[in-house]
Amino acid sequence: MNVRLYLRYDGTAYHGWQIQNMNGKESGLKTIQGTLASALRALYGDFAGKIEGQEAVEPIGVSRTDAGVHADMYCASFHTDNESIPAERICYALKQFLPSDICVYRSEKAPDDFHARFDVVSKTYKYLFYTGEFSVPALENRAWHVSIKNGTSLDLDAMKLAAKGLLGTHQFDAFCAAGGSAKTTERTIFDIRVEKVNAPFLMPDGSDLYALYVEGDGFLYNMVRIIAGTIVYAGQGKIQPADIPEIIASKNRKKAGITAPAQGLYLNKVKY
Amino acid sequence: MNVRLYLRYDGTAYHGWQIQNMNGKESGLKTIQGTLASALRALYGDFAGKIEGQEAVEPIGVSRTDAGVHADMYCASFHTDNESIPAERICYALKQFLPSDICVYRSEKAPDDFHARFDVVSKTYKYLFYTGEFSVPALENRAWHVSIKNGTSLDLDAMKLAAKGLLGTHQFDAFCAAGGSAKTTERTIFDIRVEKVNAPFLMPDGSDLYALYVEGDGFLYNMVRIIAGTIVYAGQGKIQPADIPEIIASKNRKKAGITAPAQGLYLNKVKY
Image (cartoon, rainbow over the protein chains, first blue to last red):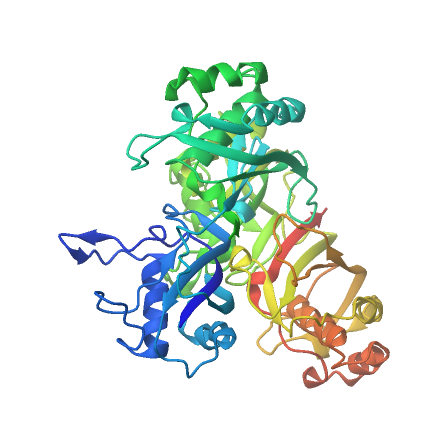
């Protein structure tokens, strides 16, 4: 059967989703995919989940998240001939084989031709950032600290306007880091919103926490992190919201904002 | 001059606040106090902050927090003869010498006889816990996962009632772990509240996040963690709120709830 897994993870300790190969061999770097594969092998045995042409269970993931990036909802699929564990119980059975920073919270039977990466209709990323003169260690590795003077704040309206300018179908060359493997730079952003988060249980006085959500049909290399950097630039007045169409049209990476750090980024939702 | 520092830290990587000695020598275990002392030495030089009878700067802290415990607000003080850095600038000067999980966010001149531990009037601790069948890796090391079946929840009213029963001055033997060094078990809880936290940017569907705040004149060994465990027991119906006075009167540790894990605990506020 083909099995669909939904997981969430803290990516701090991992070199991203994808198993890293070096000279045709696994590099030994800890990855989410590799850790999940080990858990599946521990559950099923090395070859019970054998896929044609592969040596052992290797789950297919919806997205290659980078090192340090997290997931609130990530989808992975794998085939197994072993139906002794009902699909919906696999998430419980995996608990004992996974470290505490990876949690498979749902599992279900998927159509035989389901493919976690190719079949995705939209992905939503979340980006968390906060302000203040000093950092908030409770957000260490989980949000971007935008250092600004006490008593000042980001312009939320400007950030909302800048976000609006990114909506729709565009060629996002200006929001793409070198090194990606995409064939085209055209992507569609279905929805984008930035909001100030009320979290007094977490944030000290003088610091504001913000969440940015971007839903699209797909994303170029570092695209969400560059969008986050650009939105923050708009909040700081370094970029005018009205300039966003021009920045997109320029296709020039240097016109957009900086690449926000990986640790503020979460794959938040996937739709099939 | 005598300097008061306010800091916050993520305690995950540390063996608590206090420098650990073994056979009269520092043990080499990483502590908040040791790390702060190193930063002060880097700033001032080894002996500039010399205190009578001590060999180098050693900040005095408001409380010995345990391994894995965090702080939203922690107060430490130290003496220095070097007044070249104005007291209120020390927090900026320390930035470069501190790791990112410790942040000194305020510094000020204190009266010569100020003592961070002896002069404290009240301390408030925060305890974060959440429910759900599966863990939330984004809260890994920073909150306690109370595993309960999906579709069920904790009884917030029962938790609030149980908390109320702890208010006031009592002999808290039932809420004290063995191994403490307190001369008396009498402590006063000035304020205690438990609330459900609305944090959709953080929590998945089916999980609830709670914050418990306890303000008191002082706390016995593991006292807040045992209070948190007892409150959660009340929320699960394992203890009746009406039984709290009896549990206190019993002075029997076994009558109270379990000791909640260190990682959910934060020193939240100190008053002088």
